[in-house]
Length: 130
Image (cartoon, rainbow, N blue to C red; front, side):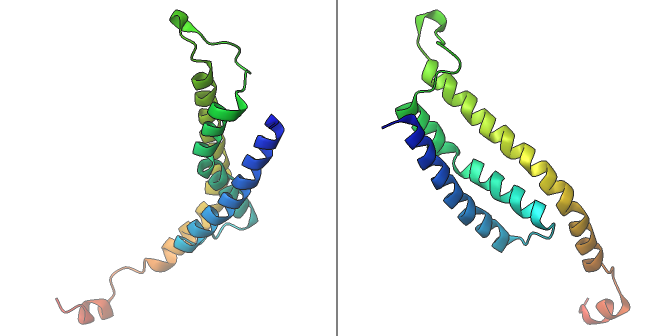
């Protein structure tokens, strides 16, 4: 098969895994930041969920060569060097996507925290049983 077919398969799998992962994350903790938060959460979820399949596919099927040959001490570690670079790039991209997520989500979380924290009232003291 052609490398393009493998890449398209990975993209389709990534979109599906991103949907299920972000939906699961949203069930556990609601996203309040709007569309920007939802999109960045979706993309970061997809990147992190597809990390292992992408690295394995690059090791076994695609064999990229953007670094050239990496052979220190006579050992050919080219496939592993490429896999490490791809994995680090995916993680770094996911972390960069989570920055706008955090920026848009923080004001809503602060507002929710202020609503929930009312302090200790007289009624709380009377009903606490202490």
